[in-house]
Amino acid sequence: MNGRSIWAVVAGVLFIIVVTTVVDVILHQVRFYPPMGSPMNDTHAIVAAAYRLVIGIAGAWLTARLAPSDPMRHALILGGVGMVLGMVGVIATWNAGLGPRWYALSLVVVALPQCWLGGRLYLQQTATR
Image (tube, rainbow, N blue to C red; front, side):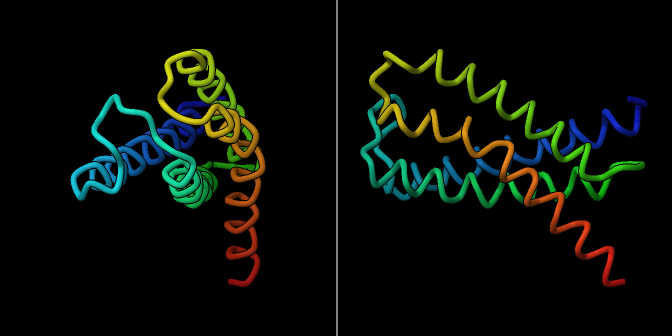
């Protein structure tokens, strides 16, 4: 992997982290989410999973767009990074009582498919140009 390839994946990771954090903060500020450190319920977790899915797809699209070659490969690498980071999250929060365990597991499960979809969307766009 060359520098542009690494940057494409890092850009996707940063996009996903920054945008999800901004949405999280907004939902805490408007008091949809409970105070930081308080457990989320299933409804909160469903909402979080939904927007993380959309943001993950957008991050993979960005990674594919920035990739110097083989956009799908780069998007799938982003998915692998997401799976690893998701597993770190599962391990870190498993017994923390911050919300339903299925939520943390769902982030691991959808990481690769959402990144495949983001890469696929980018390829479809470029094919129609």
